[in-house]
Image 1 (cartoon, helix red, strand yellow):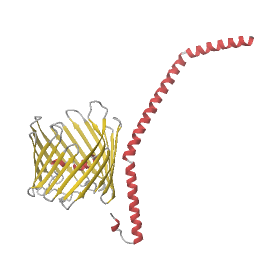
Image 2: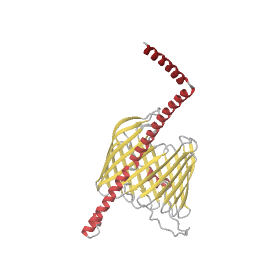
Image 3: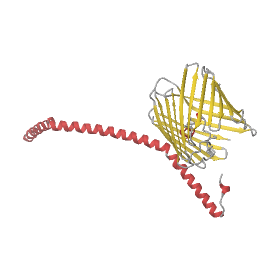
Image 4: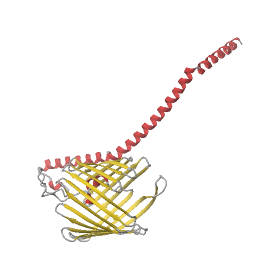
Length: 96
Length: 305
């Protein structure tokens, strides 16, 4: 009984303190700021994601084929050079 | 696919001495080909779906061509969303090439017939004719061009249906700079206009600009980094509708392939890869992304012959 009363009294006191705290200017202000921060960071994340998507796909279209093709060209040149050194003659006939 | 490995241009133009020799000016490029280099880099014909082209030479002068195109085509609509319907088309063509005469005819399954002819009347005067017949109204047209090539100028006279009359003239001013003008008069949508153009070229770059009384201003700049790589940029502005577009692109010609890429101010990215698999067999890959309209186009094709 006593414990309960004490506890009840305590909890009542706590809740009043909590209420006081939660109703205070600073907390509500803080909560608003936190909410805003979350909102802004969400938007920021979304727009960064979109920008990354657009730049990534653009890169995929414009640069990736170029890299592949240039790499193949380099390989072809190397092969030709090797062949030339093996045969000891300039491989003009190899050029298609 | 004649443009895949362009021959070492007509730039075998007599290399005039650095100190300009004004009595020995080169012949300028034709007026309608003023932006040739920029168009070659920036106006890649991106397509969507499948494309298959086959051409067969029957003898030295005569050849037949067949092409099949399949894929979605855009239908013009009022809403901003693009509507596409799948279509398939077959095109049959016949070509006749002779040093003095060139005849090209095309028939499409949707009923479109186009014909082009080019004849050298004398070695200075060239007649070009273009005609198109469609089953849609007001889309059929015909056009005759008479080109006269002088020692350091070119003049052209145009005659088209719906009472279209035009003339262009371009003159080399210095060995590198050429200036030109055009005038046209159309009878049916009663309209007339004049235009001016300038082109400056060196071994490393080509710059050209054109302005017309219709309000269109076009400027192009092409920088040739080497004989394989060129970078091009263009700028288009319409004075009356206040439309502006600018684009930047590259053109990379390798031994077995050619890649062209472009990005423009509307956010449209496009690339076209032409790959030579073996003699007379080319493979095409085309991509175009429009993030703003959420319109993505991809295509592949084969060119045989």
